Structures are given as structure tokens and as C-alpha cells.
Image (cartoon, rainbow, N blue to C red):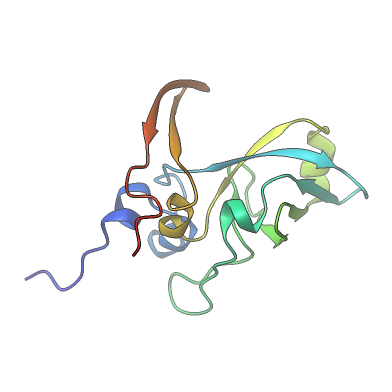
Amino acid sequence: GITELRPGTYVLMDVAQGNAIGTYDRCAATVLTTIISKPTAERLIGDAGAKALTQQTRSAGICQTEGFGYIKGSAGVFVHAVYDEHTIIYDKVLNRELEIGDKIEIIPNHICPVCNLYDEAYLVSGGAVIDTLSVDCRGKLR
């Protein structure tokens, strides 16, 4: 029979579950961040930090995560650190490819608490927002 039910993680997937199945291609949710600074040839700073991604990591097992999120479309590039409002990324290639003001998508390590941070989720197809969903259960703990 059923021994475990994880509806949030299974529906949207995240870095931890991507690690378990060996691909991030099934991850349906990302957090959009804007590059706001490039202080060195390797370091990028984005405007989505711990308040947007959480500080959750998985420290062991098949779901073990590296960093605080995965940069979608950038093989092997992870968020190095998060502060309240900032994301720190180290990657020379990505730094050369991006300019201040460019937007990137970050796949969160654990999607469940990230969903609880937002009032709305945007459905995107082909780079265009096609609908907005209200996150009705957000913040309902009592």
C-alpha cells in the first residue's frame, strides 16, 4: 500500500527531488531573479534571497543538495549563498553571459516552503505569462 504521500513536492518537483531522479527537467516551479550586480569576473548578485527561496538544504542521502538552488539552464551552477534579499552566484561563464538587469530562473531546493512565501504563482509557457494562480492555502497555519 501507500507508505508516503508528498503531493507538493511531487507535483512541482525541486532540486532535492531532481537529484533523486537524476534530472531537473521535471521541475515545474522556479523563482525569477534579476541580476543586480557583477562585482567580480565570477560573482553575480541577484535580487531574490532567503525571503524568496528559503535557506533550506538537504545535507545527506539521494536528495542531498548543493547550495541554495539550481540555476535553470546552466549546467552545474548553483546558488552559493542567500541573504535576506540577495542571491550570490559564482560562475565565470554565467557572469560573461549575463548583464545587470537580466533575469534568470532558480529552481528551489525545497518547493513546499517556497510556495508558502507567495500569494500568486504565474503559469508561463514559451516565456509568456498565460495565467495567474492564487495560492489560497498560503499562510494558513494557526
